[in-house]
Length: 130
Image (cartoon, rainbow, N blue to C red):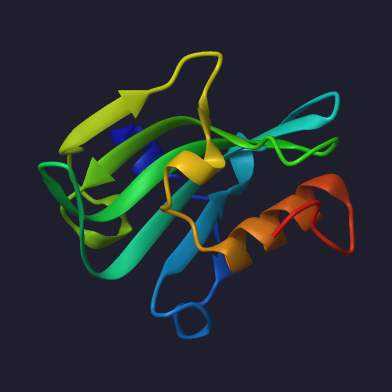
């Protein structure tokens, strides 16, 4: 994932002042659609260090699969970085396989940013579920 951290096409989805200092960026080159499902790679940077089990991190690069038919969005993979904007090598990575991990099981993306992603990917004016 370290090459993904250097993507030239990161687009800021949410500015830090709008969601408690969290910066959410989308790699425009990663956008893929398969029917009603859309895959996107995102970089999420936090103003303060976060902790998940025994990992302390400041940013992640994660792949999210957005379903336009229902609210069954899933995480496909996530890599944790010590520095902001996912610089350097990941501290740890998780791949959740084809089944993925339900979005609700891992709270790394603010709901406001998730809603913006879902509306953009599915061409809606409202989200399926908050």
